[in-house]
Each structure stands twice: as C-alpha cells, then as structure tokens.
Amino acid sequence: MPNKANFAFIDSQNLNLGVQSEGWKIDYRKLRLYLRNKYNIDKAYMFIGKIPGNEGLYSSLEKSGFILVYKPTVAYVVNGKRTMKGNVDAELVLYAAAKVYTDYDKAIIISGDGDFQCLAEYLADNSKLLRIIVPNKKYSKLLRKFTTYITRIDILKNKLEYKKPTHAVGRNLRQSRNRSRSSGRSKP
Image (tube, rainbow, N blue to C red; front, top):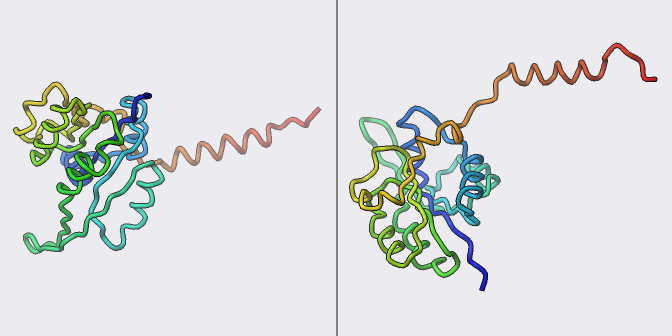
C-alpha cells in the first residue's frame, strides 16, 4: 500500500500574531511551498476566524494552496479597542484527531499554543507527529517535551518573509522591456 500524504494543521491567529510580534509578516505562498517541498505536505488546513470584509485575504490564502476551515468570531473590547476573536483550537484538534485522521500518514501542527499539547501527545503516541512548527521562541512550556519535533518559523524568516514589491523593481522591469523593444537596430 502506498504511503499516505502528510497534512498540516495551522492555527492562523497564533502563527500570524507570533510572527508579527517579531516585527515581520509571513508570505503565505512561500510558507505553502516550504511545507510542500520540505515536508511533503499534501493538504494544509488553516483554521481561521470568519470576519466580514476579509474575503480578499481568504481568497489569497486559498489561491496559495490552503484549505480554510472557518470559525465564527466574537467581538469584544480591550482598552477601548474593538477586537475579534475566533477560537480555532477545538476545530483543529477535531480535524487532526478524528475528521481526517485516517487520510494522512504524518501531521504537522503549526502553533505555539499549549492547548495543542494533548494533540501532539496523541499524534506522537500513534507515530503520526512529523513536526510542530512554532512562530518564535516564546512557545508554550507544555510543548517543551516535544523539543525534538519543534521548528521555529522565526529562524526561517529569510525564506518566508513577505516583501512588498518596490516601485523601483517595477520601474526597472519596464525600462528593461522598453530597451529590448527598441534596441536601435533594425531587424536584418
């Protein structure tokens, strides 16, 4: 029987906030390619809160190859600022441990949240844990016993950082195209 594919289960908020706390943004297209090339991840489930107005983000993530699993969000106020919260932990555990458990060979958990310690233990006990990818060095102490499985995404910043295209790059590309069109020579 051929080997089953590997799947990733991503806590989007933990990943996003953890990387942002280090002062950078992740390029999700690069992350998806990294997961495919490095760990043979066939399906990458991203657990994310559903917020009206974020349709462009959701579309971009799907185009990058993620399967989005939405969680309803709840609005609350902290220090006078309205914040949205979508707790995805239960859905992530449910998918990884039950809904698609028999469909994959190995799993990657992308989160530094200690709430996933029980899932990591269950997967490790059943020889299905491939990696735990945490956003930075400040991950939960509950995951410390899985040190041999842990990869920190902040160490991969040079490979995975989102870099806004600069206008100079676009200008240089246009100038290069214009030069190639009019080289000053006529065709023989």
